[in-house]
Image (cartoon, rainbow, N blue to C red; front, side):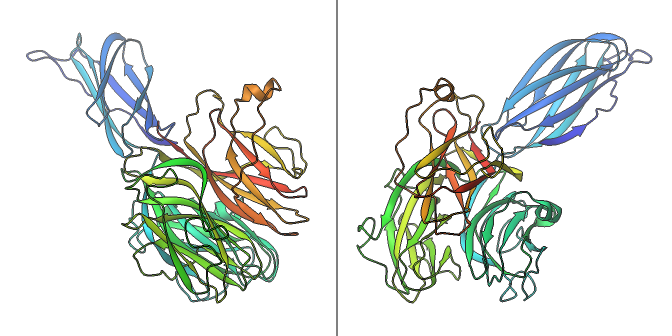
Length: 506
């Protein structure tokens, strides 16, 4: 991402008691990019008439400096590339001073650098958009093949400088099949090759959305179906390029299963009842975390309804984390603040009982420096319906997996966690999908000697026959930067994976 380009202005400075040579000229131009969450690569362009030996000092804005000397041979310039890693995300003023001591010349230039990485601030779950009630927009369905602009920066105490927002988006009151795409800009949303959620007639579908905030502090929700739908959006947090809470990915671990009495009482949760479960200090999550990343699943509900996850000790918010119909097993990714006592609360908003499963996939804490780098435009990695990512088109067979290589350096992963939107479609029976780190290096697959990973016990999403189901997966990439997509159903399926972003420490 290019942050700034600025040409140096001519500055002639002579030593005390002398004059600068007639016709002398020295300038420095700067061009900065941010190749990773905490780093900047600075291109320094030094221009001089004639030739000279120059000395340059780069003050990075964090109290550190680098220096270099160069022989500049004539006009237009000598180009240097210098990389620097900041200890924390943020905005930094980089100042470069170049001196030609022999001719008494000095040129100075500055450029402001904003790291591409951002850290997380949890937000009390708050409804920003509900087209059924006229919240955040007009009280009317979103027409087919049209979009709604949602103001996020500056709304509900979300700061103006927010770079990425975390939303739970739900489509409801659907009368035909379609999809919803959420993007930073309207044109991106309406031309997107990716989707955040898919729906069919009569279906209410939720999904976690991690999206870059666009111009004016807006995001745009596009209804890609042919008929009008209602859209609901709740905010649960945001990312800014300033120190807050970094991320730590975990291999998925089950924290709650009401069918087994894990994490709470055994048995379905009665309707209109909530329960607390301790998260901090358990399941690999330390105390002092600000929020946790979860995969929330409802199964065997006796009636239609919703689940809401929120910090313990607080009032139940007027938001939902997932919606379901009677008998449906459905999952949704959730990022939720943790209460002061280290617990979260789960409400069964249905009028009848339902079983609840909660898997922990990561956490946010001020002690972690793993920052989020957003894909400005979500990128489709794999679509089993067509040739993609080195894979021939074709469904993923039952009880098998696809190893997805996400990093080129397979022996030293530079990414701590991947944020992927996964979708299953063309299903002929029930099943569930799992997204997990692979234990192998890519060289093991190339040589035909990989260790077969054991099927994971946790699920990322669940489906029934004929359904197209999305969900976000936040997962580490394994020691070799490889992620496995598991079909744990009894029939073949098509699957789609879109990249939303990643977490990096450097």
